[in-house]
Amino acid sequence: MAKSISQLIKDEAKRQQNTLSLIASENIAPKEIRETTGSVLMNKYSEGYPGKRYYGGNEIIDQIEVMAQAAAKKLFGAEHANVQPYSGSPANIAVYTALLQFGDTVMGMSLPHGGHLTHGHKVNFSGKAYKFIQYGVDPETGLLNYDEIETQAKIFKPKLIVCGATAYPREIDFGRFGKIAKKVGAYLLADISHIAGLVAGGVHPQPFPHADVVTTTTHKTLRGPRGAVILCKNSLAEAIDKAVFPGLQGGPHDNITAAKAICLQIAAKPEFKRYAAQVVANAKALATSLQKLGFTLVTGGTDNHMLLVDLTSKNITGMKAERALEKVGIITNKNMIPGDLRSPFDPSGMRLGTSILTSRGMGEREMQEVAMMIAKVVDKPTSSAVLSAVKKEVAVLTKKFPIK
Ligand code: DSN
Image 1 (tube, rainbow, N blue to C red):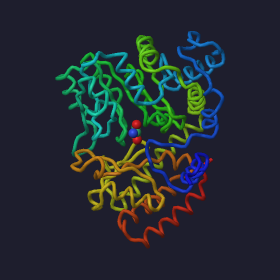
Image 2: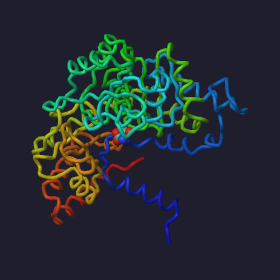
Image 3: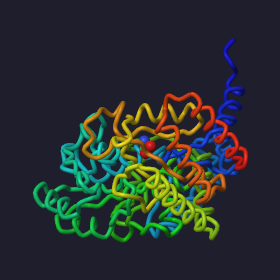
Image 4: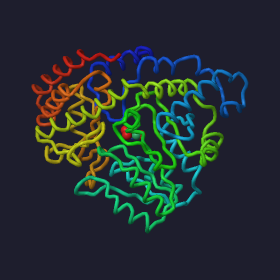
């Protein structure tokens, strides 16, 4: 007989507790946030914006949404916040809807070089509706080449430049992107979904005042609910709000809006600064340990929460490494590396992130242990003796750091 959903949720909780997740885009939202998403707020409809709704009974929802807007503006130094986007992809599409006409020229980072589907990939709506010019990283260094991006911008004269990444382990120079955008008369959108928690925690520079618009999901380094926010200058507020509702979405998910407010308030606290600093310290420790164990890292290290591992020198593909690691309870994701000649289904790299392990309370010492576990598995992925020994090590470590 098939298991019930409630049993499957218990199974998933156990899986999360008993594994070491290094998925760079995931995190563990605090219990308060998880409970808020399951609260009575999900029963309400509130199309519109605070003070201007298409349904009655929104007196309390209005207060919640205003609170979330205020917290978002304060955290990122923004003039205006829209807290209704369902997730990062719709948030980006809302920005395009607000600022562009179909067919306009836009520049974004290519997905195989670390960008995102909605930054103009050809299979995505963004790549079909707009003329996206894709920029990438230097194939030798793995770093963004700002001079090259500026040259491309001067040639193609985009109306919008998108910066931000899902697989780029270094700081993004928003100031330089802002100057390039200004020179060619383009808007600058900074998609900070991956690094929002690091920006909030003061360990990555803020995108404002360089960017005109900022999008971010709230569930990655920010440790909030699944969802997104759009931040912008006041001059663009009306266009952005209209694009979100009624342009693309109907009723906002008020339960999620409330959880966003809580996460944004938590992220303004000193403890969150310590968390963000530890995420980066852990990523650096993991990077150094892996390098000592013979791993090659794209760009030679990290400034943020993630590492991009080039597995070619280890003679294993990303898919095989991901599968072998999963067998022992280490959860990662295969990833393309810049200039990858392999397919996205079995690429040459693997992406690792430290947000979850840091949320569980682990520090640099544990990162050394995790690096050694990864090395043992990647070096001998078919040895059942190695796999069963590392599985035991994972069990000991996960037990010491329960998910709260
Ligand atoms: N696909 C997500 C990631 O893992 O980075 C972003 O949407």
